[in-house]
Image (cartoon, rainbow, N blue to C red):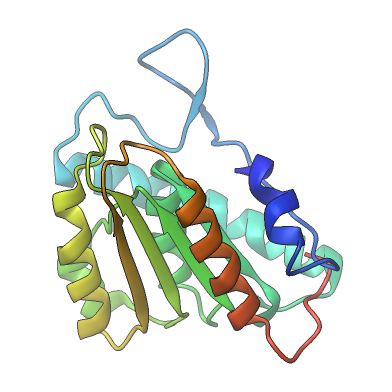
Length: 190
């Protein structure tokens, strides 16, 4: 994701960009990192993994905001795949809403519990490839419906022919979404 920072910086030139590494070694290959294991992709196991690592991501966010003298309203969370799942889970359960949340090729884990657990309602952009072979596009519409049922403003886009990735249109949508979220105010340095 950090490779997209220069593209997003075109509309947020004063923003700082951070990309935390997932905390665990990828357990299905000799290289890579993961937020939770994908060895068992049942919704309950994935949710358990997300719940277990959510405090790590939330703590990282807290430390970085404090270090920069910023608040959640100065923050945009952007994630791809597991990162999108983590960003959605954490952002919706923080005490204060971030300015924007973008999820590429992810899923909304724990949607059945969201009405009881939601604390923050940031604007959300979800972009998913119709041909995603890793996180099925069929998970997109239920995520949108669950978010909207909880009062979250969602902009949702399915990209025809796109697999598990981010295309130029997705980047354009994300850039415009960030520009809109921070319009009329200085984005901080974090």
